[in-house]
Amino acid sequence: MQNTKNRRLLQIAAIILLIFLVSNVLAEPSLTSPFFSYNGVTYLNVTHSGLHGEKYLLNKQLSTVQISLDLRPVPWGKFHSLFIYNRTPTPVAPTLYFDEAYFEFSTTATSTLVVGKKWLGFSANKTDLIYKPLTKALGQTNETVVGGSFALDKVYSQLTFFQPHSKMTSILPLQYSFNLGVKDDSSLVSDVGIGYISSIADSSLLQYNSGFGGFLNHRLQNQIGGIALYANLKYKPFSSYLSATSAERNFSKQDLSYQNHGAQPSALSIQSSYDFKVKHTPLKFIIFYEESFQALALLLPKRRAGTGLNIYVHKNVDFQFQIFKDYSYADNIQATGLTKKVTGSSTIRTTGAFQLVFRF
Image 1 (cartoon, rainbow, N blue to C red):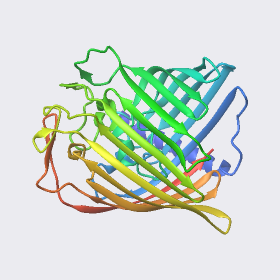
Image 2 (tube, rainbow, N blue to C red):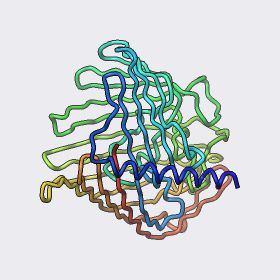
Image 3 (cartoon, helix red, strand yellow):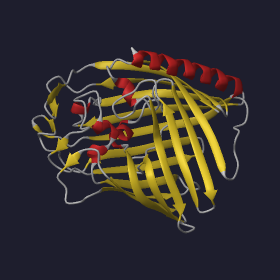
């Protein structure tokens, strides 16, 4: 009863906040100075999905409110936080939580030191879609880290160390993630890079999913790393995001299996878009194709293809549409996660989504 009451109070608070946002959304962001900056985003989603539990793959959950805050008390350091109200909680994303909260210190003009909770650079794929690309879903990882980043001219890199959520046999007291890339906005290939994580089992999707449930609070037989590749291309109004994410080798059959063998889940994603205007209103038309491999236990589709349209009616207001078809694994395919069996269904389902984005 108390949980229901608290949930209703949170929903009322969210509605009041939304009314405030709508009344102020056309105004400039406020409360900004060299020492303090603040911004917020509200995502209102309406989806119809043919797959049960598909909402966890949304880029932003239904009716999410995000508030970002940066404090810079000294020229060589700042504190960054990202607070979220999430109407659809999961074991790894509760109703109210800090998605990021870390200190960043500028050790030199080209390097920084980071301590705190943040998203790792591994599999930080770009997207213009409402639903996450399968590559991003498979690899994105949020951890409490100690690490650093380095940037020189067009080259950037990031190395972080973290204590894993899942217990495993490892010779290392900490796990690590490394990212290396080259960014040049003046060229066709504006951003290309590679990421590595020593334990892909710590990604959000492998910790929690609507297939076998996830590895959260479970001990694993083996430590399995992950590799991510990405390339972002742009030529005039055309742009493409190419990405691939994969476990570097097979999981133990007892942890994650595919067709009675240890699984090596992986995914590919291709997004292409075209920017244009209609009566001075910027729009972006998107087509995309994605495919997963040996990821049935995670309940990812075998293939996904669709289209999207983003309408930027104001710098603080976006309308986004997306429709796609999911092609499931064949019904003669079987997989397991821990002790739970997941079987393919050979189904084709259509998902439609609409998202309204307010920035304040």
